[in-house]
Image (cartoon, rainbow, N blue to C red; front, side, top):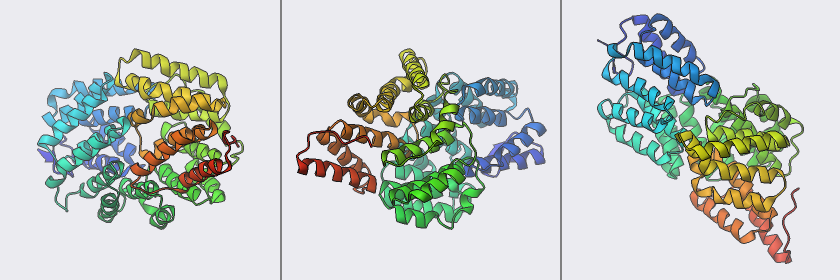
Length: 454
């Protein structure tokens, strides 16, 4: 019996395949661009290795693209063919792929947790539980899962630094900002390529309204995310947000063109970076030129996907920003139709929060700010179910606030701003401070009209 880099028994017997498999696991943890090459090498050397086939399928599903589902199913067939020869721990990865293909990613999480009950130092299972929970918006579950296995890790375990990085992010998403920052720094010291831990600290500075400190943290640490797959664009996005909060618009535009949108893909994660940044700029009255056009063109081709509501809502941002009314309405109707079915966990999230948010975004694009505010405000309490992070979902919060201002709903907007501040540990960014100034100015002048759209 061989063991992998995390000390887990493996059914792999070929030394070369095992080396490549270790590369896969470390690559997943570091969000490394080289991960796919390692996985390809494993599957070439040992196509019968069921766990690698399962990771292939699960990785495809995490990309949130309906056209990749048949390939994920093929991976399941290959994994099932070798199921009996796999170890019990490895079989649960296969079962997790099967569960997600059946529309139950929460069952996939449960299977990862079953692995961690008996193999707490299986760092790959830890990362997958963390990653799928992130997609489902389960921040409390992320934290509980990691804190359950933390005591089992020694400081010299190969996955310890990456575990700390995941812990830092879970701490931040559950509002424990001081511990999150310390833990994220420890993660990067332990694993210098842990971009997830580095970005967890960036999240802390975003949530607490400390853009200058956030820039100090990221500057000079570019090597930590330079080796990443498209996750590197997301870290640049964080840096652009910090410049935006400081009013440094020229630098925001430069980062958008040269880093955030360096490769003009239609990967939903890249689309979410771009659309949410452009919308934030527009809410600040900044003209973004023709930048919406290439996003809208790509997203008009994604309206029928329906894999993840998080992806659909960002496609919708592009269509609203690009003034594609027909495609916008088509996507809103499709989200509503999927939600009416509710025959899978993805469809359930189309129903709530998806349908209300989608209708709100469409109304915002049409300048119907009262309807936009009503729909977006209605979905605030369930928006976390769309997945992603607080920072990513904040674009919808900002649109809710700005729609309310434009509709003249001062008191309701003020309550949202107060709630937003409380969730950020009492910190407030310049976006919120500017909106408070707008409300105060309107009240002081006795105006009973909405804030202009421009």
